[in-house]
Amino acid sequence: MSPDEKLLEQNRAWARQQVQDDPEYFRRLAQLQRPEFLWIGCSDSRVPANQITATLPGEMFVHRNIANLVISTDTNLLSVLEYAVTQLEVKHIIVCGHYGCGGVLAALTNKSFGVLDTWLRHIKDVYRLNEAVLLQTKDEEERHKRLVELVVATQVRNLAKTTVIQRAWKTAGRPHLHGWVYGLENGLLKPVFHFAPGSKLERIYMFDEP
Image 1: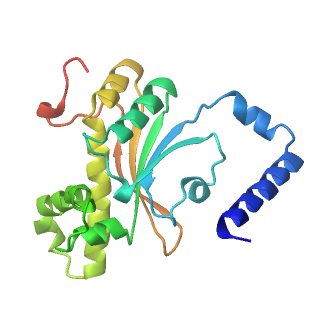
Image 2: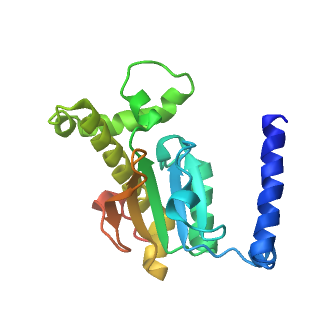
Image 3: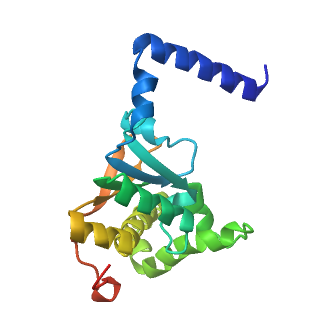
């Protein structure tokens, strides 16, 4: 059996088991999607959103990219954000990074990774703006962990700079914005940043009529 055939067989076994456990499971899922959370996570295969939060299908809307970045020119991310906030009316958005992130590690080098260079530059910018603080940490592993946390916090702030979020804060009093980091070594999520609805940014980023 080829690897792709194995996946299909596992899918069939899973679907059979779901129906045995709950005959209405798929019928119920097909009726409505009303998740409370939008998860913006890393594409890393070791950080599956539903599994590490013990949530079921339908409970979390998910977007993933390299190093869980929120970039103002990424129409993919912005489309997901617009849909999640205005149509699904999510109450919480979680940006989740993870320690040992390959994207963050790559950004710390001077090696070229082709098309990834443009993407990773956003991480390099976070490093540049926080270099003095990061260099105070002498242990290289701890410095990397701190950078992962700073990258996550920066992406939460980037969310708050969008008209989508500012409009929802003004008209609906939601969503809360959370920055979490996942530990591959222990499976635990660590909150590192939070913006409640209506939190203030520097004036230059605030829209009068979002």
